[in-house]
View 1: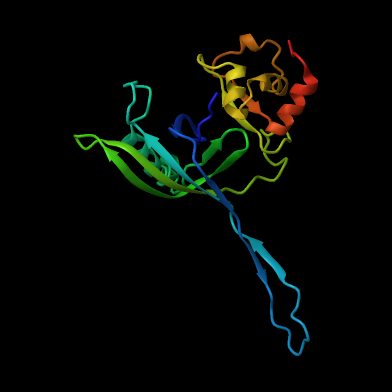
View 2: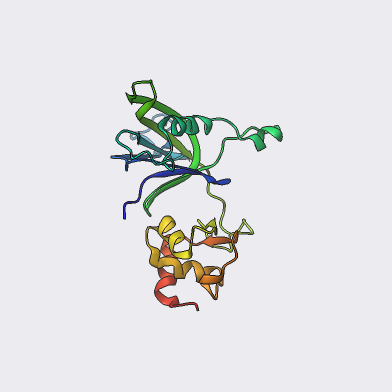
Length: 230
């Protein structure tokens, strides 16, 4: 099963933007600032002193393609995908209403290991192919995200004391296995989600239930020792 790169708004689980093809490269960067004050009459320079770190950034080039499609209406048009990226650079309506403009919090995911939660710092789009009526058929988007600070462990009352925990909401189209496949790239880790949420019968979870998702390393450990929760 191919797992494509995707961006989604963490406050709007229905707002999902999936890349048509996996990116060829993903660039991660982080900076640190050190100070080396001059020492008068010293024979050697002093040891550098740590000042602080800069935010982590992720830069990725996404490709959106509508050429040679079969006409399926479930696939997002290139122009709509690009507009969604541009909209994500604006403050959220909720933050504007509160007179405290803030960008939407986005989650970038590619498989089970390459992830980042942050805000969209920049978007640069190149349209590469057009239909005869001018409709964009192919575009690349160079996207840069800046990571948001990670909350101190134990300070979030909904975290259960487990760092890095996210959540997912059940729907008619999803099961624990499909959620595990989407979040971890391994449908077999559904047992870990069931154990983490004290689910006795995975086949009878009410629609709209919000499930806490342990980090992948903990999910693997839970699935390995937990067995079948039913």
